[in-house]
Image (cartoon, rainbow, N blue to C red; front, side, top):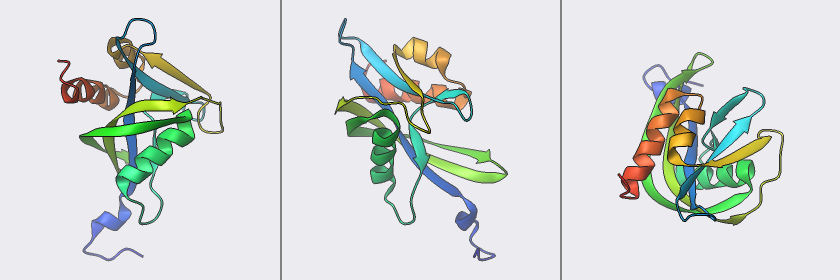
Length: 143
């Protein structure tokens, strides 16, 4: 039940990561994007937080659920704010290096792609997600 003076109760809380790794081919940087068949879009792995769940813990859980990869969290990245289904949504992000794992298609994500930062920017469906690639490069001191 929402109290009249606290609009934060109406905000959808979510978290995710800009998942990255060193390319197995040329030691360049690769960013992992997920394809969600429900929306037919490409995005960073993210999802809604469980009740009282810590945002970073939720981000790491969502990355593993959606991509099959465990990861080591790094720098905090900009938080995205937008409206989804008529409600405000806040998605907190971290840079995260993939450590190990294997992707298996699942109900939410049918494909992943490991792409160069430039290719990832072009593949992302939402312009707001493209700025997170730049924020990752800045956090890793690659810009």
